Amino acid sequence: MSRGGVSAPPASNSGVSPCDCLAHRLGNAADQPDRTRRYGWDLEHAVGLAELDDPAALARATEGDTLLHCDLRADNMLLARGRVMVIDWSWFARGATWVDAAFLLPQLVLAGHTAAGAERLLAETVPAWRRPRRRG
Image (cartoon, rainbow, N blue to C red; front, side, top):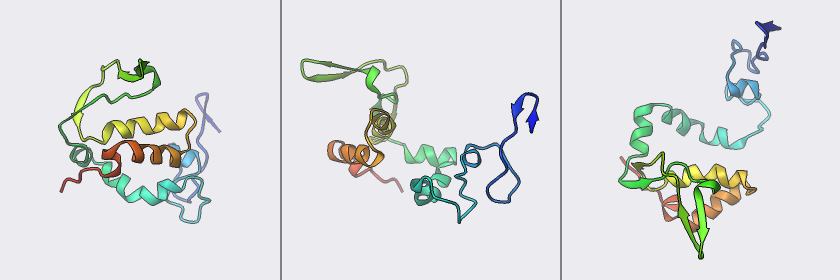
């Protein structure tokens, strides 16, 4: 069925009223416990992600005094004389030491690493990724 030329979203996979969210469109909504697990990570981290859905909680989790680039990716890095120089500091901020590694992780996956391989690479090379500072 169409609404003004836009395809209507598929019915929810849970019997709950259908919605247009990405999780329901991909059949990966967590409200259906017996669903086929397409992405295991979401179920393992659902509680923590739900807690971070609160802007104040996200701000507390990322507090820190480290200068952050916030847009680490291949086209923002130059390799010269065996050194990497980070350029284009348009989105700089101050925050937790692990934040830039978190931004870099999906870029590593896009470059061909598996998610597990990218996490392992960060754990081996970025101390803050191995042991993020916990704030209480």
